[in-house]
Image 1 (cartoon, each protein chain N blue to C red):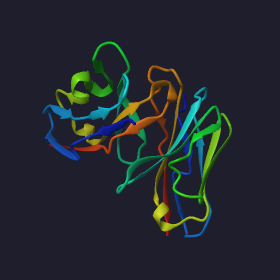
Image 2: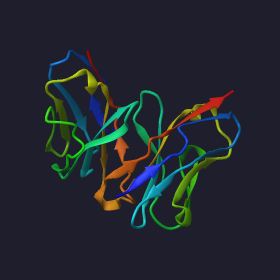
Image 3: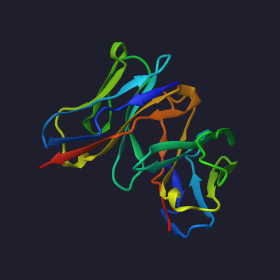
Length: 115
Length: 113
């Protein structure tokens, strides 16, 4: 089991540029979550998918953020245009419904810095 | 709506001392409860979980937690802390099959030599 894989690990970009974060969930998991972590706001749920369908995107900060899950093994989180306040660590997590409380399995995150 | 409170932002203990991290939750039904640990530069890793049965659950790295319904608590304990336990600890309540968890703000543990 390779775990949840995120890329890139670090991303530095200039304000106004488009940023795409990638995630490969654990094979067989049917839920996928995107979280953002900052010192000020802690761990925030941005959006989650069930069987590739977005279920709740109420945590997405604004229209500059979008997420897709074209298939069961891949998801992207896109920010366009990026702003300095988007600087954070973005985590992807996956889980298996009904699996003893469905604990989350996290990737190692993407540290985004927008200058 | 579900919520989680971790009253202690930062705790410092000496190596070898015992540890208890507090967690209080609010949830309308029988909760699924989790503790995760996050080391610097890493994602969150599951320490232990409670979803039914015995209210004292054992986890990895020598941690345990006790579910107390009457107090709406799920405190994490370890009898003897090691320097490698220094990390941030998150309590979470989940909605079971819905897969969505609500996290507390975390408690940062510092271990003194």
